[in-house]
Length: 115
Image 1 (cartoon, rainbow, N blue to C red):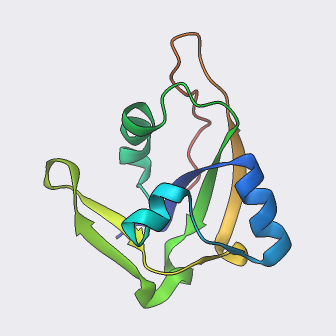
Image 2 (cartoon, helix red, strand yellow; image 1 turned 180 degrees about the vertical axis):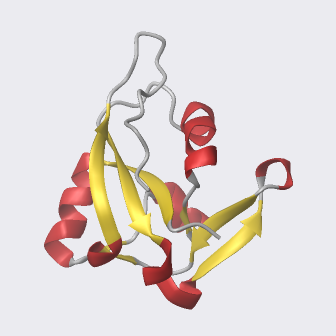
């Protein structure tokens, strides 16, 4: 589908993942049974809908192909296909982890998306 997919996480969750080598997701991901990802076209809306006003977030850019069969593309908001990872995220699949600062309106300011 797409080479890079994106996930927003708390900085402390990412620090713990780097120490262990695996990221298991947020408490919401754990409750849902998969780690939520978005494409570059979806992530800004996802952030506004689910993470508005939350400081201390990072944007993880992840190599989709590195996740193998554990990554499923499933319909969600408006029938769009969203990437869901059924299992932990290997730290080695993450191309970058960048800070997501908040704007004055409480929405996140996104860096340029990677190719």
